[in-house]
Image (cartoon, rainbow, N blue to C red):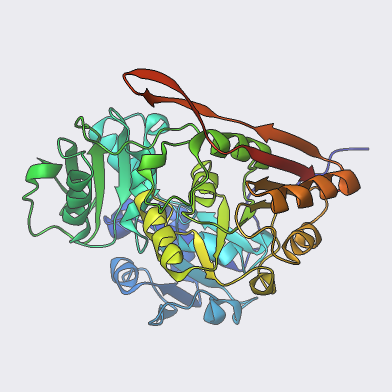
Length: 412
C-alpha cells in the first residue's frame, strides 16, 4: 500500500499567516507581498498594520483590546481570503500557535520571517542550538531562574522597556550580579541597537519596548543555583518542617516517573517540594498542590516563584472533598493527610489507566493503610530509613530519621 502523501504547504488554504519584521515591507518576499495585497481582510496589531500599510488593499482589522484568544473574528471569516500579520516566526510564541488550536492546519498557510531569537543569535554570533531561550513576554520573570547556571547563555524575550532592569535586579538579588546583559532593541529595523551592562550595575535607560535580553550568566559564591538533579537541598525551600526530605524526595520523584506534558496532584503538599521538582523536570509538566493549611498554601506559592515554576497551581482545601472537579491527573503523590477517610480511595479512583500513585507514610495509621492497599492492589512497598551523622558529645554518631513506608502503584 503506497504511503499517504500530505502537502507540506496547504494549496487551498483560506488563511495565510505572514511573519513581518521591524524592516516592514522591505524584509518581505514576493509571495508574502502578493498574499497581503490579495487578502480581503488583513488582521494584525496596530504596529504590524502600519508596517504593511502600503500593501494592504482589503479591510485592515486591528486586534481587539483585550486580545481575543479565541480569534472569533478570524474564524468567522472561514472560506474568505484572510491574512494575519505576526511578529517574526508565527509559531514561536506567536499568533500562529493560537490559530492552530482553533483551525485545522490544512486551512492555513504560513510564511514565517526570522524570529527575534534568530536575529539576536546572529547579531551576537551565538550558536542558537546551544542557547537557552525563554519568553518572558506577559509571563513571570521567575521563569528565568532554572536556567541560571554559570556559563549559560540565555535569550529572553521581554514584555516592555522596564523588563531588562527588572531582570537585572532579580539576577543581582539571587547572586548572579556579575552576569553580562545585552539589550537588543528593535532588531531588524532602522532603529536597531545593542547596549551592554552588568546586572549589578545595570544603568541602561530609554530602552525600546521591543527588545530581547541576552544574558551571559556569571555567578557569585552565594548564587542560588538550581541543580538539574532531583532531590534538591532542603534548605533551598522555605518550610516549617513539613517537607519531604531530599533523600526521600529523590526516591519519590523517581517512582512518580514524570513524562512530558503530564499533570501531578500533590496531596498534602506541605512546602510544595514534590510538585516543584516535578515541574522542574520539564517545562511541559504541570502540578496541582492540594494543601489544607492557608499559611502553607502561601508558602508553596513563594517557593514556586523562587524555583522558577510560578505556574504551580495551589488548591486550598481538605482532601478528598476538594479533589472534586480537578483536572484528571497522570500521577498522584500523597504526602500528608493520606490517612484521612476517603483520600486513598479518591486518589485510586481519579487516576486513568497506567497512572502512577505514590504514597509515603510516617505514622503507623498511614502505614497500615498502605500495607492493606498493597495486599489488595499490588505495587511496590518499600521501607526507607535514612541516618545522618550528628554530634554525640565530643564525637560523631548516626542519628536516624523517622522511617518512611513508601507505596508505589501503577493503575491497570
